[in-house]
Image (cartoon, rainbow, N blue to C red):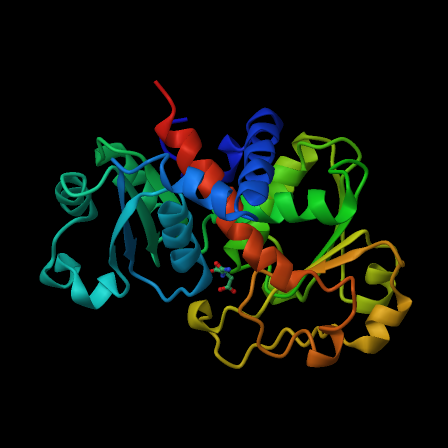
Length: 306
Ligand code: NCD
């Protein structure tokens, strides 16, 4: 794996290795000695973060991960306006240039598939931090790590995904990754306009992974081990009047299994009420913090390859 552009690259073998590394880094970060040890690991590396779309967690956690490992960071947070893209530079030219300034490039872009093009042109590792309605593999990485930490296993889980499954890239990447584990089943809570893409459903079919589609939040979440909720991707909708209308509130939580977990890639808008936050099963803030450990593990993985 030279670049990470698609969730399909995150096989169970790779994930086992990355999760073990993330756990190791998490422990080291608990002590001053450990932190200093980590800072000494990669003082010779610099990463660049090129974000053509808004981000809080993904950019900052990549940058934090890099700095925790002693790396330097160069960054443009609004590459769509502040980089030469606005002058008409192609992504290929941009990465060729940035590869002279950094040893790895993290890219988020509104255009699906563009990060593959960037990777093809780049002599240094490229990490896909979200491409349009395509993929978000590092989010899938932190999601899997969170599921493993919260549930103690990655097998035999009924995963309920809800919200905007048509335009959300996190659910597309996570569904692919979790479909590799024994006994996974999916319930997609959605409306006809916001359904999970046929390409993902076809992949699940080929892998013999069962899935159902429903609009009944209560019935679906009752049987869930993992509830993965998402916001309506308003910025990607052709029809701005669309609503998902699926809300997780305390009443829904009351019907859920005691051993289950509720996740969200964040940002949350109004699809999980604030009243849910204090529930021990609400893992979304823990989930967002897990992003640093797995991104440290990923950077280490990409830089330690021959
Ligand atoms: C997600 C994204 O950008 O796809 N955010 C994130 O990276 N945690 C989800 C979203 O924006 O809804």
